[in-house]
Amino acid sequence: MNDMDADVKEYEIALVTAHDNDEVALGEGVEVMHKAGPKAITLSYPIQKHTSGFLTVYIVRCAPSIAQALPERIQSQRIVLRS
Image 1 (cartoon, rainbow, N blue to C red):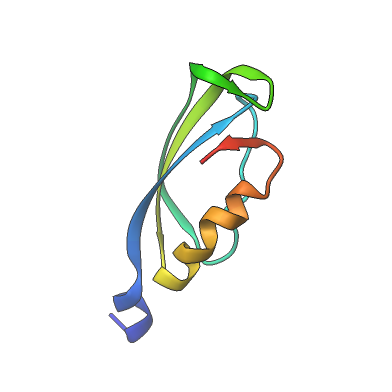
Image 2: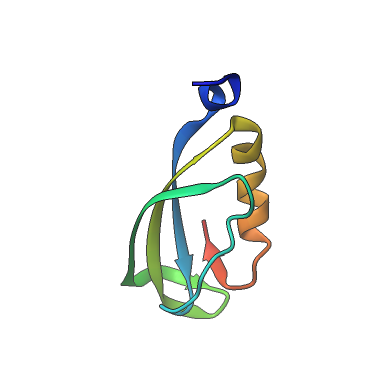
């Protein structure tokens, strides 16, 4: 294991998208270990005029510096209702 591998950690990312075929770009340096979903859900309150969506949960591996940038990177994509 080199120094770069020592800094890599696992993270869980849960996303709600408007459509079940939406693919979210997580970006370079992010390795998807497991993906669960999309699963149709009813939202407790409307988000961007949507009353339902699709929940997808990712288990990813990446460096902490990349993980810090992920929320902004994910939320900036129009297909993501909530992350």
